[in-house]
Length: 66
Image 1 (cartoon, rainbow, N blue to C red):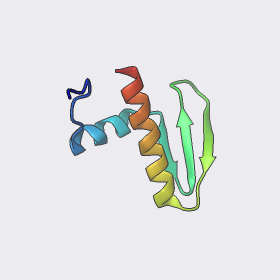
Image 2: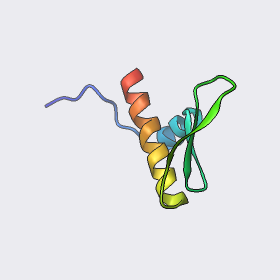
Image 3: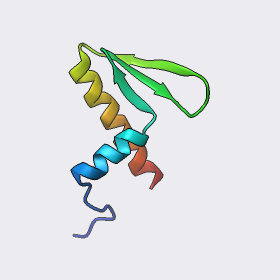
Image 4: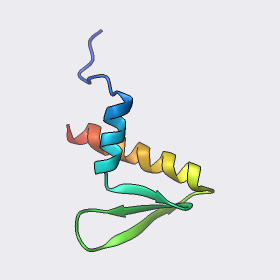
């Protein structure tokens, strides 16, 4: 079975996350869609969890857009 997705390397994940609209700030996942409005997207239990949520959203958005 062939997939339409290319393998995503650790380097590519870092690049996607750096360019993504979501990031962790303490236990909050923050977002900015390229304008002047930065907002709290959601609250997590801790920073580690917030980083995972932000990374996951950035990856999903990247996959949907490409």
